[in-house]
Length: 379
Image (cartoon, rainbow, N blue to C red):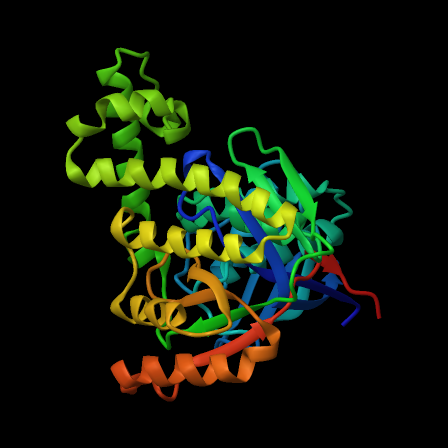
């Protein structure tokens, strides 16, 4: 194949479930992800095979985008859909896509969308700035795939830089790449797959997004502030003082969602300070606190993920961690001491499988390092 794109997966240590509410998030791309090898076709045909899923996908990039097919090819169709809103597409690709880790909680869907957007753009001589790639991939996931997420995943994957923390303001889309403090202790990322795969479209992910909007709408109404259309209302619109004044009037469900948003906003601010000052222990503790709020306030996390999380808290060498992704099945991530990886693997595996022995053949532990964002690989 003539072209090769690598789009990394991402982790978010602090900033869970707030990007779609225009909050603040942090994240890192790491050195596992999606590889897309392809040639350009002159006749507009798209022909794809997968290293992870059965079957082949084919369509004409010049034709109007069809409805979702319910298989892995929907992501290529989504990238086509989003690009065709702004550009004329005449050339297609023939290639193979492959992911290097199990699906579940590491933004694999966003990574593959970014790869397809970059590939279709290259095939059609379209020049996209990094944030345009982010926005196009996000449109594909929201409008075509139907997942009401924010920009965290795509931003980490596209904008991220090795040994830098990305801090993104999802209201203004302004971001910072904060270099690692030279005084910081050595660390890697641990990834603990529960053995369960996940599909956010069949989870309560979209419901949680709507619950946040209801909470924001109610709080603004209690304060007699102007109300915008429901789809244009976000928790970021609510001053913290308004939340503190009226939170006791909210039904528990909505009060919990709002509490998660405001506490997570504060944790992200603290996480940036912790990273910038080289305080890995503090950053890890904030990640643990983020997960506690995900369990108690966001009310997500399968019994399997909660079991892994509890095991992480009982394991030496783990600075902190949380559910990865939306927290419905999937994986947990952690900041770990590289010198203790073997002991960490043994401890988490032993504790988890003692509670869920049925996953002994599908539970996996991986250790990864930060990496640069999505790019064409030369050679």
